Length: 128
Image 1 (tube, rainbow, N blue to C red):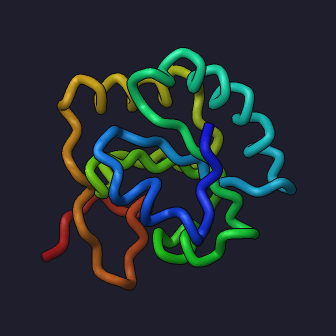
Image 2 (cartoon, one colour; image 1 turned 90 degrees about the vertical axis):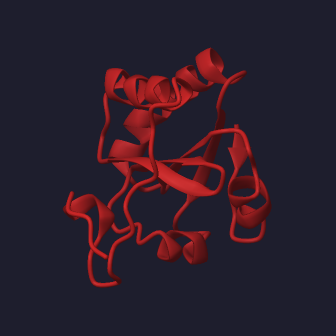
Image 3 (tube, helix red, strand yellow; image 1 turned 120 degrees about the vertical axis):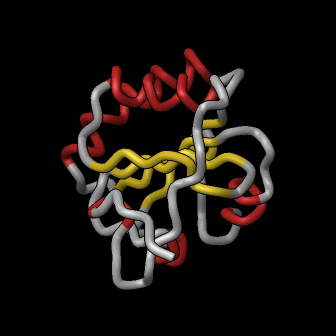
């Protein structure tokens, strides 16, 4: 498990060729605490195939703002520097595992780009 910070995000996430799943969380968030053990267990199961990282949104506001993290917990899966999957809120082990399996099977596509006034988790529409 790697710690994602404002000062290492570019190097560890965007420039990495291996898929990476980042949990955006905070120490005061009950749902984040509830999901932490599931995330840690999945890191042990899938750690050879996908990199697992955690980012504290209170300590790393530049990264949180860059990806418009307004609800936590939030999981973003990156591949070749692009977000290819998101999960917002208290996600079940099954839903996280399904997202990981989809990425590993190479059936994932990048999340569409959104206008600045739209949040990716609030809409499934693609905007030019």
